[in-house]
Figure 1: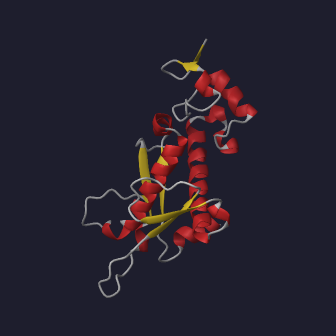
Figure 2: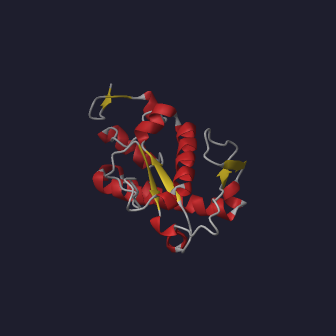
Figure 3: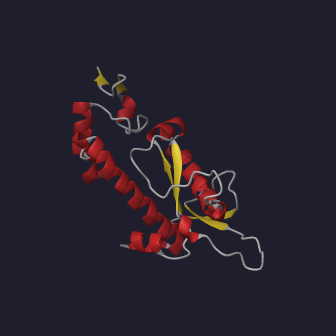
Length: 191
């Protein structure tokens, strides 16, 4: 309900960056999280630039069918009228203790920020609902893993499915216990 209220509120700018398992395995989860934060902030700052007259790729749908390593979901409806020709300034609030490198604006980190700042809490809702919706789509693509129920967390049932069926393309190979396993091209466990 809160997700829907956020995305449908007039004037609310948001962007959610989606980073693939492949990219996470390439750079690690912390770096992928920081990269996603930077990509999302940059996308929010550019919402006014994304209109039909440009060739910019803007999409408001996260989908399991997308194959990009990273992509961003934004809302086109939040374009704002510039008042008196003033340029907008942005300041990002980051949940955690690290600020991504190359941030496109000033930023500050706030440890446990989702419980201290409404904007960070709102961003957390957008990210988690997007992730859960993606897991529901992935569940339809890879039903043997029951991703709809455990959302990709390493529950006993999930790990049993991986041992039985191998890993899917969305499984992160650098996370335990998969990082200790060897897989063939189709994701089946070797040995």
